[in-house]
Amino acid sequence: MGITLREKIKQMPWEHQEKIRKRSADLMAEEKVMQQLRQLFKITQAVLLKYLGFRYF
Image (cartoon, rainbow, N blue to C red):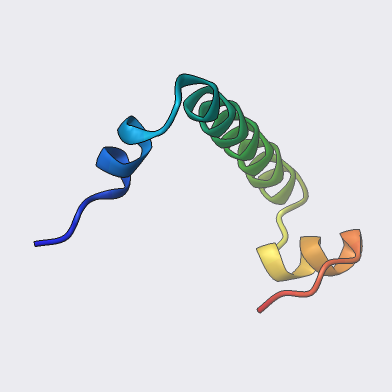
């Protein structure tokens, strides 16, 4: 069986691991804000992204 992403990350230098953790935390926080906005305005993800100027795939 292949190597998992977690295993691959553990093989990286400490500095790279920290960058990955930071980026991951930033993305999770951003997603939480988007979720709260969708719930507050009672809109779908597609509508929110359209309003913010993003394309929804």
